[in-house]
Image 1 (cartoon, one colour):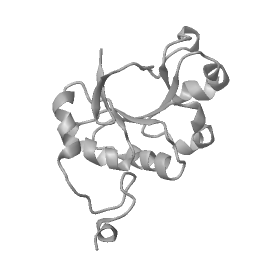
Image 2 (cartoon, helix red, strand yellow):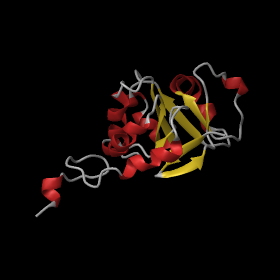
Image 3 (cartoon, rainbow, N blue to C red):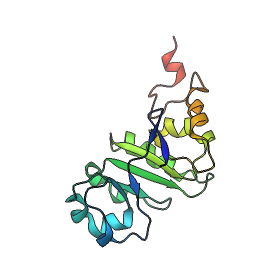
Image 4 (cartoon, one colour):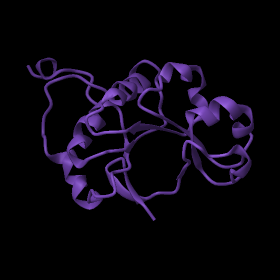
Length: 165
């Protein structure tokens, strides 16, 4: 069983991340699933009628605006990083928290490395499915490596100069 980092804790994964080519007919009714955006677009009403939890995942080229008015349908929004050098979804996480007020889980999936966790958390991510070669236990230290931040962000709304004095 895969382990993920959620809210600074290492936990067992309970959600099933479905591949892009998942067929609607083969979906379980009771499991907690994270579906690709295309499956949600094609079968949204039927997916909402399921008994299990529902999440959606977006690829790097997918825009959150496509489902911005439907965010209350999802317990989890997973944002896929196809390469660690592709940071487009950092902006998506920030938009989810700041512009759209999303309170559910925002999860980083794909090519997620330990070195990115602190910055990703600042953008609005609260869950991380690390790349398989990453040690999740030691990755927890990434959240405490910096004691202070200068810039305002999703997790600290005031910059340092506004907090001092």
